[in-house]
Amino acid sequence: MVSRSDQKYVITGIGTDVGKTVVSAIMSEALEASYWKPIQAGDLDNSDSIKIAEYTDKVNILPEGYRLTQPMSPHAAAEIDGVEILRNDLKLPEVKGNLIVEGAGGLMVPVNNQGLTFADLIEDWNLPTLIVSRHYLGSINHSLLTAEVLKSRGVDVRGFVFVGDENKATEEIIEKSTGLRMIVRIPLANHLDKNFIREQAALIKPLL
Image (cartoon, rainbow, N blue to C red):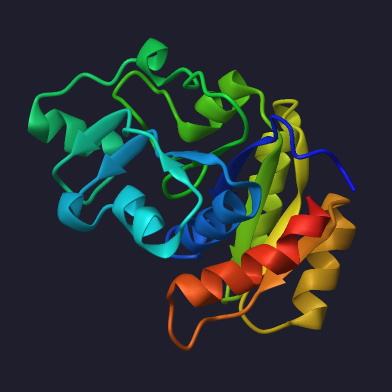
């Protein structure tokens, strides 16, 4: 089993609403890690950081890099709030031990009006990255594009986390086309709570 010392990962997704926050909660709990959401856009009273805190017991929640009031692309939300998002302000936080960083939306989401994207930030952070994928019409394309962008930037992509029921044909072509493996499958929760996160964290822990 790999040592748990100083394991740091970025959790990105093939798009919105594919399960990044749930996967981040499971990973953070499994590693007893610090959790960081660089940019929270909208839903500040029920942010991803708040959800992670509610779902987990062993996670240190770090302050977000930016908190924007509008649920939209960071570049547009920042403009409405009169905030300038700077690349240098989104450097990795210094923490002892393990760290999980959760992205927002997909890789090419614009972070500011100067062309900065989450793909740029992931390249800057230079951490092993997991891609969260969920099956829907078009998910093969989105999965392959996400993997291609990350690999073209030299990012260490560890593999896919598939969320939901198995789709063998889809998963096999994604793995074959990208050369990446499935790390784990996370089922859809009938009731999302701490027990579900703990159960999944116990299953994924030996795989990290």
